[in-house]
Image (cartoon, rainbow, N blue to C red):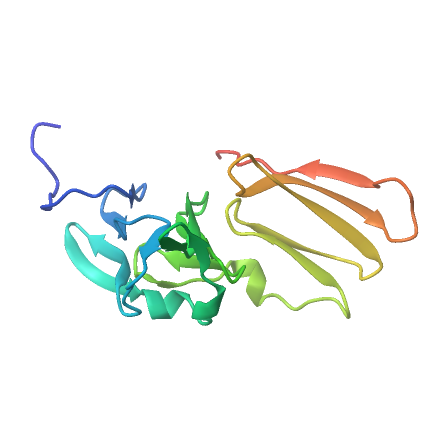
Length: 178
């Protein structure tokens, strides 16, 4: 293309561009670490459309219990960015073990469509926000969820009845284009 669609000023060490080419998310330049004198109102995520800010998310909107911040030298670790998932949502995990999903087109918290479905009586839910899937399984089953080298959720999991010795199902989920 010989003419730019849009542009914006700045340098962004942590950022994601949505597949639509219009929505861009920038993250706190300190990455995973907060300085000792951090500001609870510090903007951690900025959502833009064609270079214009549509929403910003502050630290206090992501962390509820600041005592859970992990000391890392003279700083604090507060989360991990997983990045954009296969559905185009931004995924991150806080030190409180909360996985958060954001719609990059609005900058607002999002939910998978399956989260709105009714659940079976007493059934457990397996959710992988990074791979963009969710399923339910009976309460008398155990699930082992794998993670990859950086700690992010893997697409692989195993399932078995609690009383069984061997794993009954070993499965993986892949993103397949239409």
